[in-house]
Image 1 (cartoon, rainbow, N blue to C red):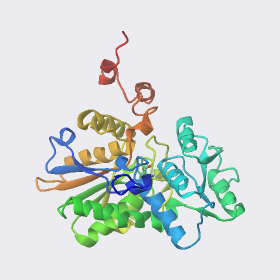
Image 2 (image 1 turned 90 degrees about the vertical axis):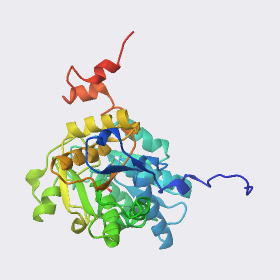
Image 3 (image 1 turned 60 degrees about the vertical axis):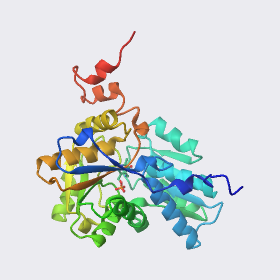
Amino acid sequence: MSNNIKAYNNVLELIGETPLIKLSQTVASFPGNYYAKAEAFNPGHSSKDRIALHIIEQAEKKGILKPGDTIIETTSGNTGFSIAMVSRIKGYDCILAVSSKSSADKIDMLKSMGAKVYVCPANVSADDPRSYYQVAKRLHDEIKNSIYINQYFNDLNTEAHYLTTGPEIWNQTAGEITHLVACSGTGGTISGTARFLKEQNPNIKILGVDAYGSVLKKYHETQEFDKDEIYPYRIEGLGKNLIPTATDFDVIDSFTKVKDEDAAHMARKISQTEGLFVGYTSGAAMQAVKQLVVEGEFDKNSNVVVIFPDHGSRYMSKIYNDQWMQEQGFVDSKSTANEQHIEY
Ligand code: PMP
């Protein structure tokens, strides 16, 4: 390639260094300054690009992954898409075992990135041989030269954010960050970022976001796994029904739980007011900020960084679909959504 041509060698070079964007209208009445760490600016449109690249490159360094080998994971979400993307460029086969609950759109997205998708029945227990956990395990055992990413129990997930997201936020805020607000699923994002930030300044407050229906907040407060906390909810990628070892609960100061409906409305509000087309959990993180404002968490000197994990395009058949919102009971007849759609 000519030295005059300013081109990236491939999309992997665009992973990380996502922008920090000052929020305005959404936070107009809140004390302090609020900044979004916009992870949708990664080439795979989510923070999961960081962990896919880091875990795969560490396996290469250790010599356990060579071109032509197979990478296996159990996810239909952002992690699957990112692993498929990295696999394409580095020449690996990618196998994703997903639940039959996953939408057709999501499965098609994974296939568009070249992944082989095993669709496994959703209504079986995790130890049933047909469950996506067991199918992934079996494939890993059977396929020679394969690695299993296992993001919920892989310390490299957390390390990816310790090495990239944390330092980026520290540098972008010139060390003036006072609070970090981040969703917790595997816990990799919040734990890795927080660990780095607390090493720079232990006074930075780390505020986790959890879902109603998830065990994380209760576990953080009591160190007990309370299965009564578990029930179905809509937000994907937030909260969990088990305790992931990728989460470092010690670096998190507190958790705030948010409701499906509030998070959905907040995501739509961010898109409409900030011009930032964000996913469902970005709405959840911002809803947590709103609740924390009411609790008096911030003052005029606060510099609050809120991680927005992914892009709104992943949710066209959900929170950005008026019919879906209505079916969930999230929209009443007075909603602006009705005013925006004019049949002529
Ligand atoms: N938001 C979305 C959309 C996600 O897919 C995830 C990952 N499960 C998260 C937030 C939470 O990130 P983490 O797994 O690093 O806790």
